[in-house]
Image 1 (cartoon, rainbow, N blue to C red):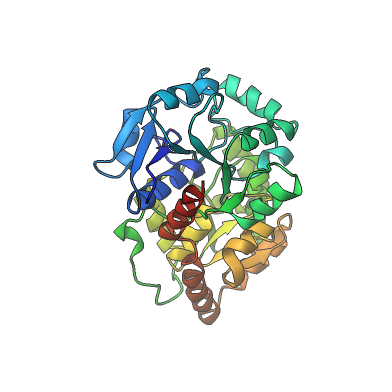
Image 2: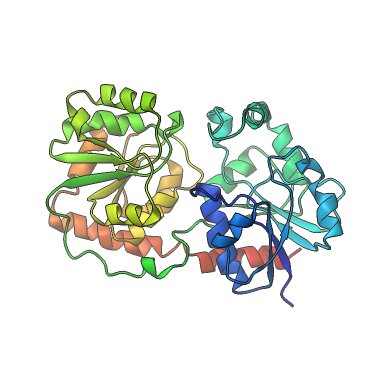
Length: 361
């Protein structure tokens, strides 16, 4: 018998998606197709991102002071199985089965919290990541734990973060829309040579390596798509030196514009020191656009043989990796490999993996 699942959809953003928001939307659509799902929201605007006609209930915002007591309200709602794409839901006094998600361990090594968080949450975030024991308390309060990559699963085991079973439920690309059903590229893009960076500008993302590498890539443009402060933009222009005019700042783009830019690019590029996954890599490969990424474990797990790798702190090595894709033959080979590799990351497969966890409780 398939279980009735209450899915924590409170992390879906109503302005623009971040990684957890995209993960939530993709997974709930696919899970809703194979079992009965009730969405737990905190803002009715979140419904526009959910499957049409899905049953829903309302709970507090997850950053509200009452979050530690969320389980009492969930008990009153008659919840039997609750899945959250985060690990911070209040579990005290729960009478239901609980599965939590830990996406990555980035903030233990890079403790600066996302600037979009409220001040009080940022302070708590930094304190939380000073030690491992708070994470252990949260995860051990669940019945099972989900993570989005084998790389993170191995880190969870290394740091002994939970005694509960850990399952990998991969991230994937897009929201299961026809937009991803398109023909593979027939040739390497001609004309303007665009490199695409999609991601935040936090220090661990190491965007400076990409910026500094542009002096070695005359004829190329580096398109930085995310919202950016004036101060950060000026800092990057100064770093680029004579290549400052090769930087194109979009300060945020729509989903359709993002896809349009990807389809016109010679590569998606990423120099991160650390990641929990890397959705833009899959999005790019799914469209047949090669990826040029830093030589870290999670990118090898995602990109496999389809990616071109470079040493993350070496602008010259980054530029050399881009230039390895300048021949039509090599570019098309990587394009084909990328589309095959992207097929490993599919919301239907991820929903089935999550359902297997829920059925095991």
